[in-house]
Image (tube, rainbow, N blue to C red; front, side, top):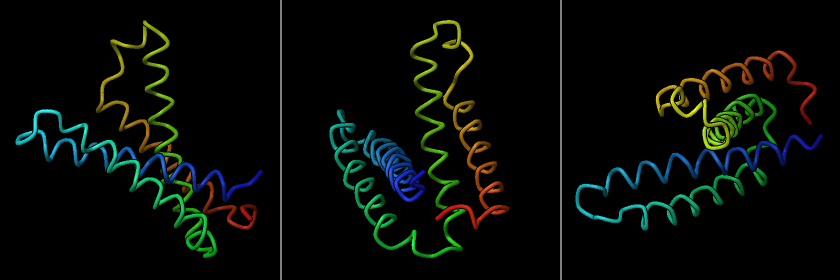
Length: 122
């Protein structure tokens, strides 16, 4: 498996989600349609983070577990959101706080597993 690609795409997704949410919430007080500003900023930040991971960050063996853990957070948020959208019985259970808690737990678990077997991720 190409772990560099997995990490780059996951870091891009995580950065997109963080930047979009942060910019949208910061501008929500002063701009009515703040998502129209937040989403393009998130796309730019996500693309830059993915490119940095692919070109520079993956070359450091010590950074790989952290990169994979952060990438897993983005994948987990997308998976929980997709499950909430697709399965109607899950919608009442999934909140933003629970989705973030699950995503952080997944990220920590992936970081721990990748730290133990860091030689397997080339």
